[in-house]
Image 1 (tube, rainbow, N blue to C red):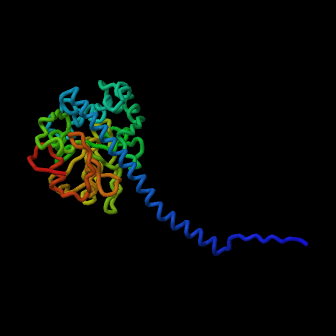
Image 2 (cartoon, helix red, strand yellow):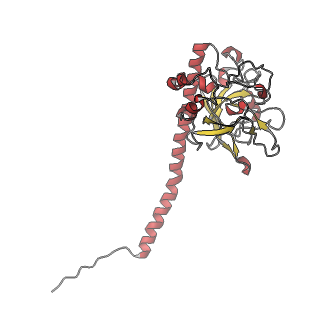
Length: 314
C-alpha cells in the first residue's frame, strides 16, 4: 500500500496578502529611515560649523583679529567690487592651518594670484569635507567666468556674514563681521558674540518658489576679481553679483532684497540650506544654532550685524 504525501504551499491570495503587508511596512519604515539619515547629515553639518568656529577662534588667538572676508590689496573700503584686480584669498583659505589642512595651505603660493596659476588646480582638486554640508548634492568644484575666461573653484556650503549690505557695491564696509580687507576684533562686536552671526549655510542651487534654478555656488578659497554672476532675481534679470558673492552672505540690503529670511529668496547671496525648515548658523561665540526659516525678519537682521544696538535673543 503506497503512502501519498500532500504538500501545501501558498495560494495566490495568501501570497498577495503577504506582499501587501510587506509593502505597508516598507511604506511606514522608509520615511523614518530617511528622517534618521537626514538627522545624521544635519549633525555632521553642525559639527562642521563647530570645527569652523574652533578654527576661527584659533586664528583670533594667533592674530588678535578675525580673518578678512577676503583680501584685495590696495582697494579702498568705499570702492565697489569692480575696483578689485588681484588675489582675493578668502577667510576659508586662511583658516586651513587651523582646520588640519596645513599641507594644502603651504602648497598654495600666496605671492601669486589665486587663479590662472598652479594655485587654481591645487585648490579646485581639494575636496574638504569640513566645508561641505552632506545634505547638499553640490559637486566638488564649479566654474565661473572672471571676464578673462573660466576658472575652477572648490565648493563650500558655508559663507561668512557680510551684514546688512550689498555684497557687490558695499563689500568693503560691511556692518557684519566679515568684509573685504576686514580686521574685526571681538571688542568691535558690540551686540555680543552670542547674538551675532559668524558663518552660515548656502546651498549650491537656489530654486525656491518654482523659479530658477540659479547657481548660488560658494567657495572657501577666493573671491575671484572680475566675476559677475546672475543674482537670481527673476524680476531683475540684469542684476549681477560680484566676487564677494562667492564667499560672503548677507541678511538683506536696501531695496527689493530687504525682509527675506533664510530659504525665502533666490537671491544668490542669501543664506539657504537643503535641510527641512531652516539653516544651521555659527555664532561668533562658537555656538551653533538651527535657525528656522520662519524666524521674524527684524530678529534675523539684528543677528546679522555686529553693532546695531538691537536686543536679539535666540
